[in-house]
Length: 576
View 1 (tube, rainbow, N blue to C red):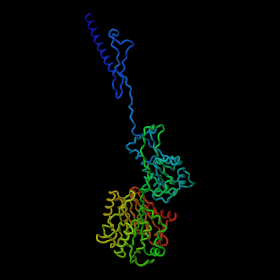
View 2: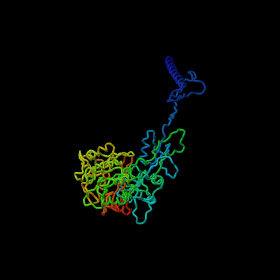
View 3: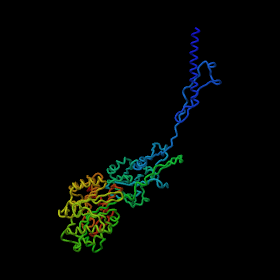
View 4: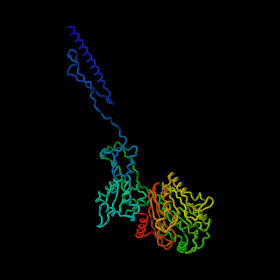
């Protein structure tokens, strides 16, 4: 029994010693501290008050808490970029610019952001930020050209006269949010919000559909309307007077610690830069002979230009399809000639100088009326006066060569050909003349130009018909060239102007009518002058200018009533 008790005592003593040794070890290590992360975390040992426990005073091993008390500390990370929030009103293009900035940190909750990108009306006096220009647009076959701001606000506020058919205004969610900051919440059901991809189809489907879109969303099937006489398609527009614009600015969140010196990304100055526009004016048939030549002799070389001078001079690139060669031995001008054999006095080229002409198309079928020599002489005269030519030349290769023009970030290629003949006016490998139409060559050339990032503009000297629409063959040829990638396909042959069509984003105008010629018959007096607008390498669309021939020689801008009648006729004839 004693032996048993003694053994038990020894075992307990050994155990106590082991616990004491363990406690001593833990105590020493806790005094030195243990590393947790970058901090020293103390370990707590629970002890009774008074003396340290010994074998004699404490028959039980000391109570040791082996679980350290750890305080979790989030390390302080220096913020390298500001946190940004973007308002719903911010247009998609501007939003993407911010989101694509590698230093941008976008947060969903505005309260967490350091800076918020918001719409700020101009009357708030803020001068920083991006100026965003919007356009009031309608389907292309819309007769009206201008809406006053008062009329637009009446649509927004649902103020219409009794019995009037209300116009419907379509907007994307972003545009609606932006305009609401300056115009307030609209009234009535004539303001409709839709995805921006749906706006065009919705407006075209409505009899009086309009839309407001950011400038960068303008495309060929839209007609851009003036607001109070101002159009964003006009590079010289006074932006300070234009009402459809908004400023987007970084707003500092209240309480932000500015000592961090964190700044939001720089914003694009504007979505519309006047220096990036290119305007191309295409015109119809010019033939300085017969009556018009007689009028020029009587009233001066510049007489035909007088009323439309600004339309031609203001374009960056002005085109003339001159169908009649200059000839030093050209017979004197007389109002009527029995033969259909035309030429022009070399002095008449002063009309083109005064009009600011840049490009002469040579696809006309009267350029060889007096033989090869006047054609060659005319080529030399054009180049002496600084005019570039296409659609004809000293041989087939030159006649087919596209005219490449680069302007303000846009690269254009002008190509032209003659399909109507007669055969003797076509260039060959050895002889000069107009480029004959070969659709395989033409479509291949157009595709290659598009692959090189150049926008092809193709003009046809096609078969003539006295109707609002051309023959089916003309339609087929135009569409084939548009399918190949031509952004514009235009008919230079028509003395009687024709209608229009679209193929995807390509615009086709089958015939513009005369420009400078003497046909005063009903229907022939009407003229289209097409002003095509490009922006930084992108085709935005066309503005249809309309003129009426007077005095056998002098086109003038139509009156509003004449213009409305002409547009209505041609839109209807075009199937709209």
